[in-house]
Image 1: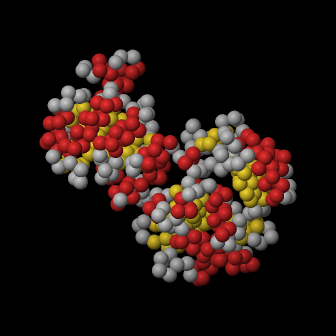
Image 2: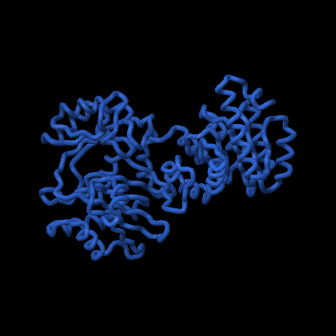
Image 3: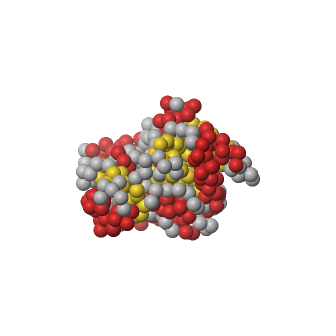
Length: 443
């Protein structure tokens, strides 16, 4: 269980850094379930936190009815897609913007028809986009001032931290880069929580007017209460606003929850929307595998998150590109290996597979037998480089060499990585000129 939890901790970092040649994973590690904005808003409401009036709609007719219910002629319709940059995104049908201002129920219906059932492409989704299954319609409130506030778990200090900035409504990464002095960090003693004095200082430093200080303090304390009671890894409110009529409202909310707390937070995790996740990653999780698809062509099958990172780095150092992160954890059984191979080979770009297993709990010879069985049953044509270290590694090496299959058993990590890159290039060349893999490998 520890290995599974540890490897999950790398998932968000990996997705953000998958195009970077060398990664530093010692910084903030996150593992989190993300929820749609309308669900986050509903949760804030249950804690007495001010949010604009709004409801979710899953059809154009529902959107029209919700707009009528909200009333007024100034609303916002937001595509419910788990990705940043929705406002600047584009739908696959050509509609610009996943967040639009609307002035009537008729417009709500019109935009809902163009959003629901279509994929929204943003800077975070990649070219494939993500399917919009619902829209969130809410009243449009006008802010006198906009602030940024987030509560996170800081791994370095081992305590919650409140990150705040007077420059809300903006890309916080840009603010951090261009004006780091505009961001304040407050560490919270987990035994004392957010004190009245601490909340007051944060609210004052942000710039709330005097008549809103008490409401702002109350909002900050309630957000921290959610963070603790719901096992959150992130609560990000951007913007946290003071409106023209002096209300303190969370205009937008992004919440994440710790996967390891699912047994305590059944309701929260029932909100999970698998349609917003990569289908292969969902399938992998069902089999206890930690899998993230990357952009390279060398498939990786490794046990242990740290070894998986090292494997990907050494592939890059040798001029190759990993096609995935895949950690089978301590359960490198034949069935797990088979599921892993099916996930890896489902990507047509994969031209070689690097199996790097440290046999501690599971013996290397048992892994080798499982590997041989899977290769035979799947009739794999691409080269497989196997580096098995640990218990019974000599027997494993002999089993592979005597199998008659084109599995290259190599004990040295550097040599195995070099071989993976070389064979991958050979197979790519063979595909380019339409020559069989066996011929290209000289087998």
